[in-house]
Image (cartoon, rainbow, N blue to C red; front, side):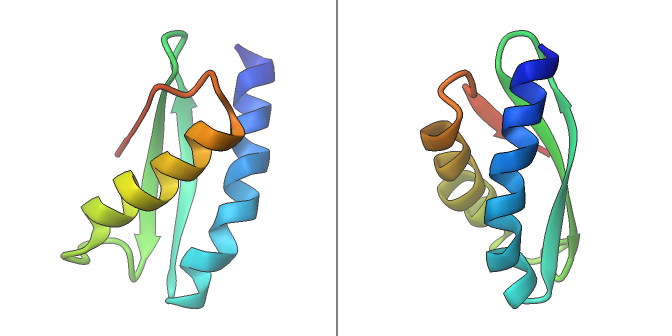
Length: 75
């Protein structure tokens, strides 16, 4: 599972500048064996009313396309 976690981290590193441009960020917490990625939204993303949409339509969609093993992204 370490290999998948490394792929997810590299993919997140490509996504993060978009979040940082709006004052937010996210950090990888864990990747489970069944493909569930747990992240922590920080900065402006934390508590933002649009954070769920950012998580699902932004981060999750990008991670799934970059790392096929990813099934879901949660906080």
